Image (cartoon, rainbow, N blue to C red; front, side, top):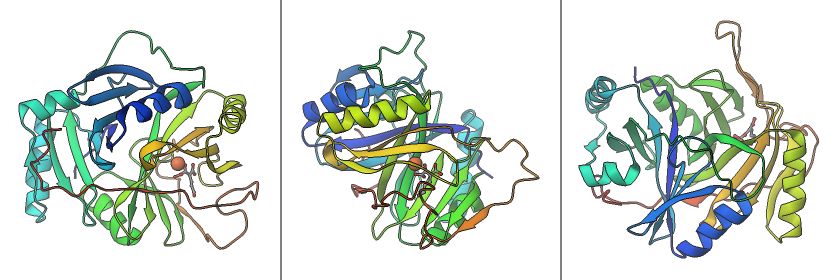
Amino acid sequence: MIELTDIAYVRSGAADLDTAVRFAVDVVGMELTAQEDGVAYLRADPRHHCLALVEGESGVISSGFTLRDEDALADAETELEKAGVTVARGDAAAARSRRVRDFLSFDDPFGNRIELVIDQVTLTAPVRYGREAGITEFGHLCLDAPDVREAYRFWNGHFNARVSDWIGDWACLMRIDPVHHKLAVFQGSQPGLCHINFQVGSLDDVMRNWHFLEANGVEIEMGPGRHPQSTAVFVYFKGPEGITYEYSWGVRLITDEDAWRPRYFDPAEIGSIDMWQGPTRRVHTQPQIRRPLGSTGK
Ligand SMILES: O=C/C=C/C(C(=O)O)=C(/O)C(=O)O
Ligand SMILES: [Fe+2]
């Protein structure tokens, strides 16, 4: 069993890097930590970055998760290979570019590129947020897959990911710690990044951000609303390069593992996605860039 200790980052290609960075800083409110060799690093909390924008082809490159230490990384490599998953170790330059000490990468059964990392760099300086959006942390990341049940068999079969709630065969929300979900898989025809979430400090922050986004002509994909699964109040919006961002506040914590029973919500039922029954438009997925394993220099 591979124990994911946290989410680490999303790495995404940006055909127009400057525009994508400006949006991440001026609209989303992240801090631009560094920019070098065509990679812009953005952070929302003490992690060196949780979003790396890589100049080049548009699309998601990989999603990173942390493991405890190098033994855990070696064990993960063995377990995945035994299961027939092809794994590539990152080289020193690629690890440096990710601000981790070591990592390995593989594709999930649908072609989502996953990276398992150890020793992600932490920064001590207070985050200099690009604007006062009220962000408190990188909250979760959601992938797309054509078969959500099969995706769960993969994540639960090899990793410590446990379903917190199902939304039909359309979505599986998974926890790796008490937070209701830090990883989710949504039904989609192609692998890709459904969205990246930032937690904000209050309900007021969600609503202020919604007004800010509207006033600045940003496309709202869904919300404001409240998810019955995590009870979080949310707003989803569309950024450059096809990235969907989400702010949310009030995520449920599952503190009694033994007592929790995953619920089953029918996406066809009113209120199953948004308890406030707002329009439940599908958020737009950023497609996965397909590259051979190991060609992960950037
Ligand atoms: O469509 C349902 C989404 C549910 C939640 C939630 O319960 O908070 C998400 O954040 C999500 O995965 O987008
Ligand atoms: Fe979400």
